[in-house]
Length: 251
Ligand code: PGA
Image 1 (cartoon, protein in one colour):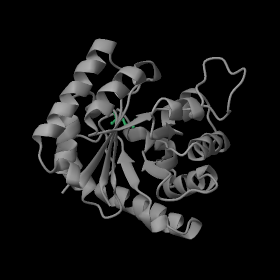
Image 2 (cartoon, helix red, strand yellow):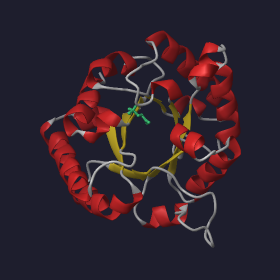
Image 3 (cartoon, protein in one colour):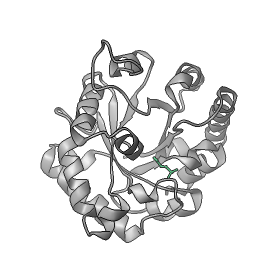
Image 4 (cartoon, helix red, strand yellow):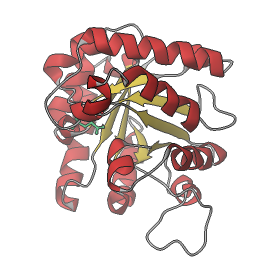
């Protein structure tokens, strides 16, 4: 299974910066021979930059292309929302759902995350379903139970290794510079793998990403953990050097 190295650009970059960033990433992949044999690269820019980035990505065929969220509805009077069908039409292959910033700032429940993931799957794209505990839940000893409940309640009908990816992102590690220990990551990823095997026929093949302050200097240790199949990267995905440096650490 190839590592999935996924960049979540969040609400960052000017249009000019986004163009420069994607050009740098494309050049960087070109000059790093062999990286694509081990890694699949994905960028998820903000909705408004998607046509521009898609154009750059399609011209080179080196990267996959995704969105950071979608609606749980097909169409209609939902001001400001974007449907999975629209994203499919715009060339998306992946959609992140249930990111902790969506769960936190927009009060998204597991039921809503599942409904969004269902739309992604129904539209023949791959849902990157984010799970992860808060600092409070970890200090209460509830990390594992929280993550497994999110998994149970967010995985859509008809899920398989082609149409879902799980991203374990401890909320307290996102954008903070704090990283979970390799032992903690190993424990949670092993439990996620076990749960996926119980839930789905090809649960053994579903990619499980780690996310939360992944950088080139910690990526080697993290990506060497057996059930870590890639990374979901925020801050370090905003520079080609650090984004690709993470992929280089994946041996
Ligand atoms: P970070 O973000 O790499 O900046 O911690 C990760 C994420 O939110 O997916």
